[in-house]
Length: 342
Length: 228
Image (cartoon, rainbow over all chains, first blue to last red; front, side, top):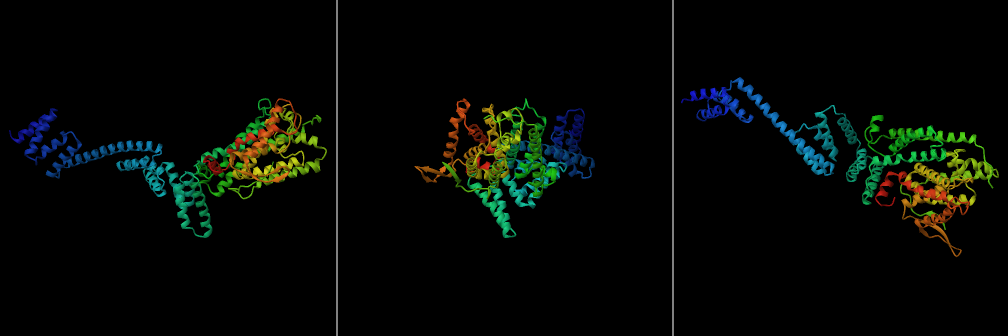
């Protein structure tokens, strides 16, 4: 049987749906005649994997570079192959990132960072992975790079934009950066930043100020002082004034808030709580969202912002107390003094 | 046994401004009591001191009298004893808290001293006065914050004056200890005392709140078992 007859049989088999038979016959043809363009063309449609189809198309184009139909088909196949590979890499990256998050939750930061970087090697445009790198990294430059990448991928993410803005602020204000590290309990890193800033101090006054911070931090480290999160301090200190107000209000209500119920005394309590919170916020240096929301500032609040917050806090605390004492004075006017019992 | 001074240095601040202010205000109010009010003290005390029956019936100055009572004293020795104790125990508690929170704690301790006094002696028509409830609060707070603190104390051994540095715990235990028997007798209505023992105990127990009032660094030190 001539090769033409075999080719005709193979084509007929392919048209009849007998793909395996057609493929076997075509393979026999190209084994004997590797320059058979028609056989390669038919094979490009009959082999199973995308890779084999691409090889067949490439062979066709080697024999006849002017075959535009096959060139278009090859481009389509290559695109498909690329997206298949991307999908696989994306799946691998998702799995790696999930694993990294588990390690990060267990505070195993080194492994978490390594796995996240592996995920990024697989899939570079992975926003969540860049964000995780940004959060886990203790180096401000690395953090900035990670958040910038995440922002390039998704510029509509407000949190990324805000984090990036904050990092830029910290980079421009290394003392704020050191304070922030201290707030996060990373004393060693904070100390490094202070030392770097001290080495670049412009005058002796600035140096003295930074040196004091270094001594203080070293003291904390030497004495092995436990880290207390700023949020804990804010919550703890928020109790101060409401506790006093509540005690005074109870005295005003004769230690029986049910019999001598006084609505406006109770209404004062939320104000005192709010005031005490603001006062604590102004005192405890923290990277609180309120600085950004109310004052459009990054970091732990400027002196003006903290002063304004403290003033508002005192206002909220003092007004209910004044009303309480005015009520006392009012009651005193109608008070009939009992006679001496002895 | 007369505590004279806390021999340890301040850590956070140079000068105990609020402690000194409280001493000045107490002295000034005592001056007013003696030279302005004079013999007409009964209506003044009924208005501005804490009388359990008046407070429980929600009459009189209520919360205001609770504050003013802390600044009234029954005599010069009452005032001097309290002010000395305020200086000895207040200075470093203020250092750990900062002046405003120290004031808040002082007033809270005084208030809870009055609360216990009112609850135990609810039938009493005798007005309660003095800073001692608040000062017992400071003593309790001092003990919690500085358990190893030492106080220069004047003691007389066979009429010979000595001023050793004694651990604060012994001084505080002594002053709290001498309240217990009279307090039990008052509770059982077997005796009547001119000293407000239950207010002292109330103030002392309110010291548990001190951890809410101290500075963030002092709190971190407290948690780390290091000197506050």
